[in-house]
Amino acid sequence: MAMVRTCQLSTDFEKGILTWEEYPRPQMRRDSYISLCGEWELYCHKGEFGTPDRNEEKLGNIIVPYPPESRISGIERQIGKDENCIYRKKFILPDNFNKGIILLNFGAVDQICRVNVNGKHIGAHIGGYLPFDFDITNAVTEGENVLEVEVMDKLDKELPYGKQSEKRGGMWYTPISGIWQAVWLESVPQNYIKSLRITPTLDSVTVEVVSPAKEFEIAVHTPNGDLVKQFSGDRVTVEIPDGVLWTPENPYLYEFTLTSENDSVESYFGLRTVTIENRGERKYICLNGKPYFFHGLLDQGYFSDGIYTPASPEGYLFDIRETKKLGFNMLRKHIKIEPDLFYYYCDKLGMIVFQDMVNSGGYNFLVDTALPTIGLRKGIRHKASKRQKTRFEKCAKGTVDTLYNHPCVCYYTIFNEGWGQFDADGMYKALKQYDPTRIWDATSGWFTEKESDVQSEHIYFRPVKLKATDRPLVLSEFGGYSFKVDGHSFNLDKNYGYKTFDSAEKLTEGLEKLYLDEIVPAVENGLCAAVLTQVSDVEDETNGLFTYDRRVTKVDGKVMVSVAEKLKEVFDKAADNVL
Image (cartoon, rainbow, N blue to C red; front, top):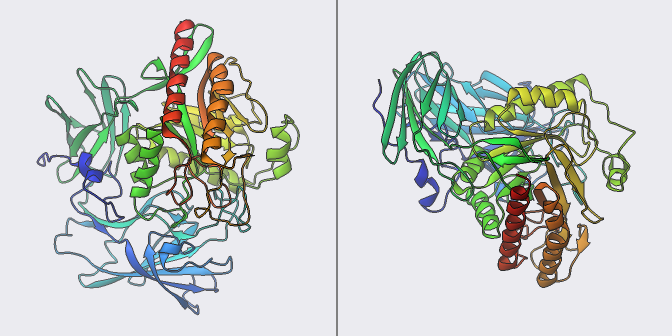
């Protein structure tokens, strides 16, 4: 067996300012890692995608992982639908990169890419939000290597695309393309550990291993010493005596090392369950077996400098830490999948994530928003092609695979406000079976079919008046109150929000009144979770608690913390009263 090494995950973001050079996958850390983030050459061409016969135009040097449309990428140029991008990077492998296999890893590339190394085609990938890797062992040399990534992004709506729009404005945002998450190399042995699937209970953890190797040792590091277990096969269960449970209030993580005959990875888990349980005549979402009120914010994941990617991972830390300071314990990650580091920070700092699937398909304002908002929720539905359905389900299952090990991820939304919705009941059944350990919201907002774990409502432009039925009640969007801060707005001329205030004081007063007059009574009637729109302003939208540049907090923190305390008090009393 390989030697057990001490895991250093807990100090990652306590060392100082983080960069994209940091190890991008904290739940599969190895000692061999080379970041390929930084300066690349960027070209474009209008020829056929994937053909060697093309006339390239150099756009300049781009800083990866920032999309070329962003200011800090060094390009700041929209890529046309008739253009394909070519990224080029030269690299030399160090002498100790000799374990047997060289893996090239990508966090995400939007939307379709082909990868060559030293002129040899390595592989291709479709979809802009999930990680992927290639074995490039047979293509690299001892000297200088040339990595080439060709990208095509026509904003294909049969693929998941999120809130990107050619005609940005209002609730639609600047589209991005190309490499927008980390790129890195690893050296691994032939029989390397390919992936882990970590399933906790309140007193144990089961780790499933995908690897050609068959003999392993796991060492779980606890305050009372290591729990070491050798096993054969593809899974092991380790009992954790006197285990410390993971909660937002005490986000305790157990670190562990998994070794095989010639490989070793470091990872972590949290002892945490999320279930639906009866309390009297009501059903509640329970964290670790107890009813818990999920006090959340809608989190679009957009940044003024890098659009899809903050200037550094510190951007994620800011959003998580500052929203916790305001009393929130949950972020609804809205129609976007972030790099693994974001979810690690939520695990480490104690922020629950309600994760949306990334939508595909068309959107119609009248059908999908206007009529349902005033209560007309039957009638016209979108049609989805076979390709759209197949790609959506593949991305949804890929999202589960990518995020499964994170204790912070407690809840998934499949479809949002009918946007791209098809066979919601069928998708619910397939995905609930694929991951039964989370809560599944089949249709957030409206267009409810028969199957879902929760009753999920969106309420804007009218009073919040809700009462639980036979499912846990979730207010998955509300609010959208707007205050535009001079000198910190994206659009000097236009403004987008659902109720406008002219000062921070009035915004705070308005939010306090909304919570105390409307959300508190809903909590008394069985509300389990509430998601206020939103964390920050995004381009034209000025309905965030922070400005788009994150330089101004628009609300009074003491008032918001007082509101959070009131919600918890009322919720705990309501849940107690129905026992």
